[in-house]
Image (cartoon, rainbow, N blue to C red; front, side):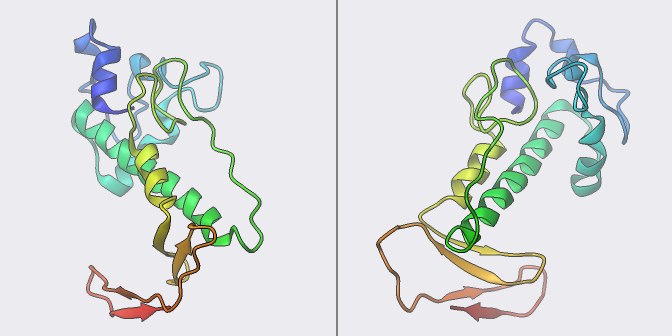
Length: 174
């Protein structure tokens, strides 16, 4: 969930926003875990999510930073899922089932928008991936695809120029 939603969830317990003893493999504390879903389930804490998030974005030092980095991870995951479907939807993909649209209780994961109806990273990743005309790059093979979701609006002679921000080579595709 976004930091504003997390802050709103704990409005009477502001001292519980962040546990300063957190470390790289921390599942944070019971306040965070209580907002992870099924207390008996595999994802009942952040122990599976914190190490990869720390590896990709760095160790968070406060709740606002942790929530922002979590939303970046959610953005990337949701965007990739919908892009993967979209690029194959006219070939061999039959659909996507997203669990879940929103939470019935303030929780940190699985939602497109949260309990307070705030769109976070998952919402914006989905929105970007599902735009009517979308350009995506597959990081596994470097292929650039133009995804046309405008139904009967056939586009002809569309060209995209790609410039690598990390100092790679420039290229173009059709």
